[in-house]
Length: 237
Ligand SMILES: Nc1ncnc2c1ncn2[C@@H]1O[C@H](COP(=O)(O)OP(=O)(O)OP(=O)(O)O)[C@@H](O)[C@H]1O
Ligand SMILES: [Mg+2]
Image (cartoon, rainbow, N blue to C red; front, side, top):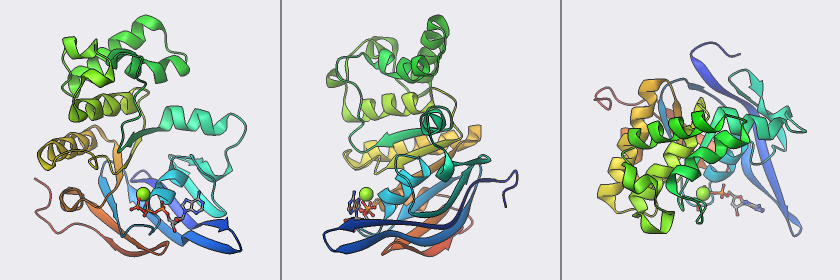
């Protein structure tokens, strides 16, 4: 059951990959609910199912069984253009390797999801500039292509792009994985600050500094959530 405080509700969710003669239960019959406006870390060793779970929540992949409700939308049942609409309007993705489009400027990268969503050009540009300012990319850098930006700056642009269509969820797969620890910390703080605007930020990570900053931690092992914890009080500043 979902209520105003819950943004993601996962019920009996499984994703089994068939490879060769065996089946890998990458996500194995898990259920949980995530509160709105919080930062949630998904921890666990390599191969435990973190990316698979994130991809299911973001409708980049389909579950073998079970349901995922995001903001009242049954993500596991969307089809036709439904997944695309869902991904464009409800979720923003941030990845370890940024995935910015190399021949577009930072500004154009942030405008792109709005173009796909049918936003008018003037509005797209104004919004993109506002978001880039918000994440700390100044006007000269907005005009640069990704290769002329540092890794931290590229990730800031990717975060601005993720915010372009006003999503409820920001999904990050090892978003600090390619950054030095200082830059990584700043990116985590930036992601954390989004929760103040009511965004829910879900991060798959090995980085301990993300897990300690999170409001809630899900720990995965062999496709199962083994520990689900609210933070110790004091984790929030
Ligand atoms: N497309 C696929 N086909 C077959 N098996 C897959 C596929 N994607 C993932 N798996 C398997 O599912 C399991 C979970 O993988 P997943 O990528 O979700 O782990 P992870 O926790 O994100 O790991 P890491 O920390 O290394 O990123 C692994 O055993 C992996 O080999
Ligand atoms: Mg992964």
